[in-house]
Length: 331
Ligand SMILES: [Zn+2]
Image 1 (cartoon, rainbow, N blue to C red):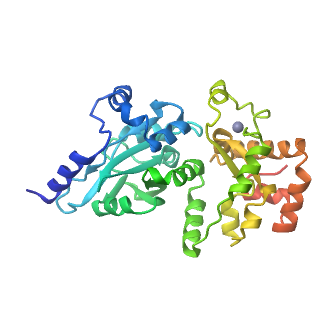
Image 2: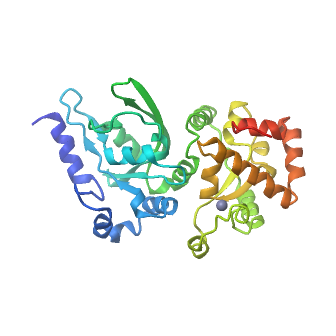
């Protein structure tokens, strides 16, 4: 028996929600509906995509390489091809789950990291490869957002992306991951710094409550952007994110780790996941439009002067510099 046969055997037994080849996503959903209904990770993803068609359940598999018998992989040419043509606000998400030591361990990654993926996708491309022992470690750690690189075969370039791994107890980190979307490089840096300094710069429960109350649990841009859908009215707990108007990566770039400055109420705004995603769009014009919206909102809500004072007093920056931080022009 080859070494990797053991891994194949293990995965055959322990891949959860196995998707059969050629099985449609709806058939897959029907098959596992009773379990998926209660799966926190699956439901968190569904909240973001709002559509089962955007979820790619992919079985983690052995790499089947005799020289690298412990290598495992995720492969989906369809996902890569979709990702390349996807627009922001239209993300696809890989959902992979394997049971290790009786614990469901998940791997989740989003398509927005692959929009610039130039590689041919017809050459059976395993863009996610790991060692089998990594899976075992993940089963016992606290859930993380990690950085990975996919090699662009033939061109020799690499694509950097972030993925989340963890179990159902680490939903908060998963929401972070899904909320971060396109700030790949900066976010990776932020995580590194945060881990290095062992920092906790979470928004306190009290501040969170205050923000949600102030915005009446609604997206601040709901009138300007008309982002409310009937669906989100009915399902009011659809993802809302507290966004840092001066984004987190700026603080880390500037080596500012003071929670009072980062999570200052003047710097926080409640957004629906769509508006949040647009604000970190990789399309400059979209990003600018949504930053304009935020400021427009603050003016209407009489928060603008306080925000300007905050920028100046705490960060010594001005509005045009804020635009610079977002990498967009201020006219
Ligand atoms: Zn919104």
